Image (tube, rainbow, N blue to C red):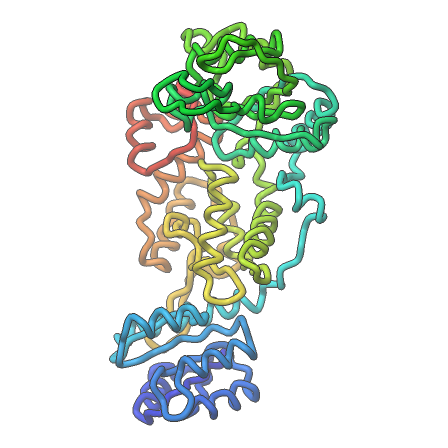
Length: 488
């Protein structure tokens, strides 16, 4: 039996709630003031608190503050007939699960209450945050126990002690700069500077000055001599991110530094010598850029002495929980608070996603979820709306307040063996989740799975789906699937 504590000083409201939630599965306990509610909270240990804002004595917000001192996880629904922006903001800042306005729409009220009870069950089943990594791993920031990441770590260890140039390739958001930092940290240049520059983020006219510096009067606005990034990291490591976007003229100067260790500042005639290790990174296929004469072949071979290919997150799903744990701790340290826990349902949703934005996208999702979570636990409802289609089918309360769900645990756990059985299962889900639109949900998932199955090759994916490549492209655009894809 699930216990609800209702704190409201209106007898009519107490009576209405008892009628609406009259059920063997739900027990309603009432209190007429904040002070009485706090006493009942200690004695009854409810699963959910529903509380009015305006009451004699302790107000709802003051009571909520005291509830949070006693229990940081208990879901609390705030309700009022006097909705103001300030009250709503304050209630959510204090960790209210939701905010309701009187008079209630009964079906909506029941839906929110049963969602809150479901959240309470998820919180109870969630353990407090437990570090899954060693402190050294948290400090390094490059996380993974999957086989692809273990290969990356091995290569970092092999190359760190040398001065060989390294080319790190992989999709955006896979952690290429973290690899460069790890190589520098574990190498014999660790005590010297590490300088990173994004070649795609700086206008072409300014890139050479940024890299090599300039002399006074070299161009309009050059009022004083400027030291470039290469001079700044003499003896250390320079990380040239997105080098595939570097102009050909600048590529020639990079080639000269690799070959001779010398360069001139913009507007200067004196050759300067530097001792710098170069690590470059790109999300482009440089071999194709060389063929298209968009990247110098001689520079490519100079950079590609040791190559580290970063795997996309969809190829290392076993690392997702480790990464989530890492981001929970990392973000909590930045915000100077205890790490939040995360429910099993939320973890399952995150593991189902294809992560076209890779680790960077995962970090952004966790950051958002931490902000949106009202308590100490991240629930499925705190995840972005675009991930909600990955949720398990939920139960829907019937008119009596019972949970009606034709998918029994044993039946739901049986994988469909035929297309017909799969179709029946989909419609069972739709009956239980009124928001589920079967065709768009299935179509989007099939497109994502086909691309994952073929490593992003559109031609192969279209053939697998039985559609043309043009149709596949339309579906990719329609569903906003943004992962980097092969086109041949």
